[in-house]
Length: 137
Ligand code: HEM
Image 1 (tube, rainbow, N blue to C red):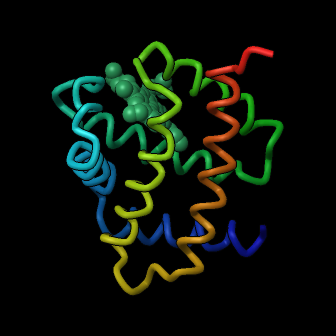
Image 2: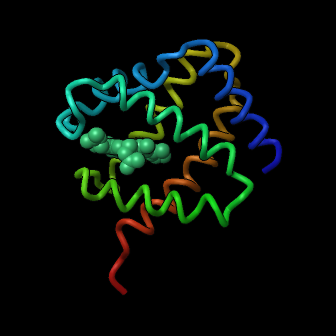
């Protein structure tokens, strides 16, 4: 876990440092892979790209502080229901995010880094989707 956190922080800082429009690039990639999500977002995607980068940075800063992170991630996910986001979108966004990091960092993004991102994103999206799309019992 500590190694994962070190890897995601290091690669995220490198990606944001290498390209200050990494958020915009992420959305460009998302709309290629999942064009059906384009209509959920405003026409001008640059502000959204900046929001995503800021929020992901905040999440990575709080990844060891679950009593702060979890309620914030749950609220974020519940707001996403009103944006028209479905649970099935989360794995697509995770894959596009990781591919965007690969594109940005090239050989500096190792298989171990990919593994760390897959684990962290899957924990985060599990927390978010469980809050936003509760299963009937
Ligand atoms: C780790 C997962 C995610 C993070 C950190 C994230 C972050 C954000 C942030 C910070 C906002 C700004 C509004 C707010 O704070 O409520 C937002 C809005 C939005 N997000 Fe996400 N998001 C995530 C997952 C997703 C997924 C899976 C989708 C599906 C396509 C999505 C689609 C949207 C849409 C449609 C908006 C509203 C845009 C608008 O109308 O301005 N997000 N997201």
